Image (cartoon, rainbow, N blue to C red; front, side, top):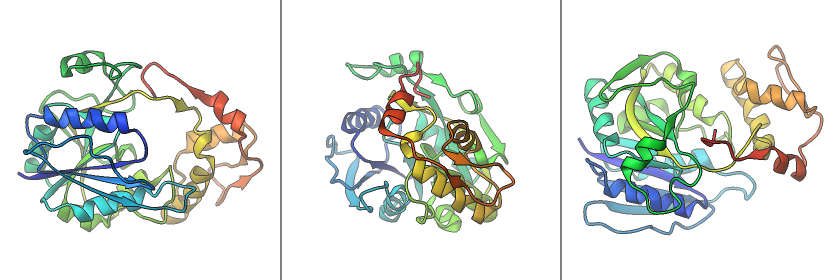
Amino acid sequence: MNFDALTIVRGRQTHLENQWRGWLQSEKKPDRWIIVGMDQDVIPPGQDDSIEVITNRVDGDGKTLPLAHARNLAANLSQSEYMVFLDVDCIAAPGMLREFEVALETSDRLWMGSPRYLPAGATLQDWSMEELAQSAIPHPIQPRLSTGELRESDEYEKFWSLCFAVSNQTFAKIGGFEESFAGYGAEDTDFAFAARDAGVPFGFACAIAYHQHHAVCKPPLNHFDAIVRNAIQFRRRWNVWPMESWLNAFVDRGLIRFDPEMDSIDILASPTKEDVEQATVLTPAGF
């Protein structure tokens, strides 16, 4: 089974280099590693005869990251029957592609992997896969699977794009990522709901990826405009609100007027630079 690995990037060069180190240690290597830069050219982190590295770029409006556009371009550049999308913050565990291979041989569906979160400093110096495996922890809302375990699911709202596998044919059936979502927020869930709408089954595989630590803004005030805009668009497409916990956090700060029965959101104020700085924290696992 042939795979292309797809990654989109803005900054995060050290994380990209660590991802490359991970691919070189993979039990099954991708045929191609396709990297799309957002508003930047990609600096390939290395070369190896076993993996073809392809780079490209997309440009947005200079205000919001063209996440959906970048993912779709990466998919369009793919030449393999199967694709694995891996967030730039992630390092593939040696068995990740093997686990996805078993999953896709079992059932042609949208398969989400199993992200594990690393503590601060875990990848700043020289690191080994054994050290990453020992220090990484699962996210509390995602299922905990054992090696080789697959779990079918109808909880499409739990899909995250940071680590998933899909056939090229099924990606086309879903319609790719909706590019009218601009910037951060709801584009993942929209993709999953589009899969559900297209009759594409969903599931979880024990395909482990190690998420490199970085600061987080809680709530994500740094993406305030995009989250509000994308939430409104999502509501119009699917008649439900996404990201309610974040929207309620904005309510608590007096930034918006919102409740789930509303059809839109009233913006009362925008977060200041100081608000964003005060909400940015270094949590133990980066979530």
